[in-house]
Length: 227
Image (cartoon, rainbow, N blue to C red):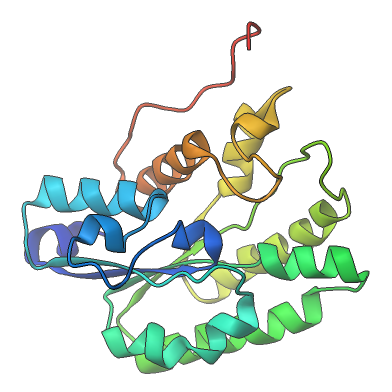
């Protein structure tokens, strides 16, 4: 059964948490949920789920904040996640930890793992019935962007995969999705190595919905040789 089936039939709350990729220029002060969800994958997912459920009591919340790393999300976990009492939390975090390490020449894993593990512990303790969706942090090699980011991101991604197993969470395999379509023009999908384009956000939503809800959008494909 889809993880989201109870939400779609009875209502509830799906909360997206993360950094700028999740944030996508959301406007939390707006009354229209379209603006509150930003312009990225939470809008695509949330809009589709609300439309196909037809339920006004299905709440989709975006709490991503640009620039945040795992420690930042942990610091605001009670206010920005737990207090909303979500039924499902989707977490995408880690690329800022990797990027900071790439620019500072240090190993990001100890600090990331400490904060990430504590965050998941707090969520499990406060919300024992909440379903956790852990999205892999991802990157693509784009010209002009530090190559040292990618091994750091891979290290963090491995910890996210392990955490999904240990916490019985659903893992959304985003790196493989981007690798499958990147080809010779990764900038079509992730314009600076970190931040997805419109096509990249569609790919995230497509992968998330297929993995979490069994909903299959038209698949993203590699670019034509006539790019």
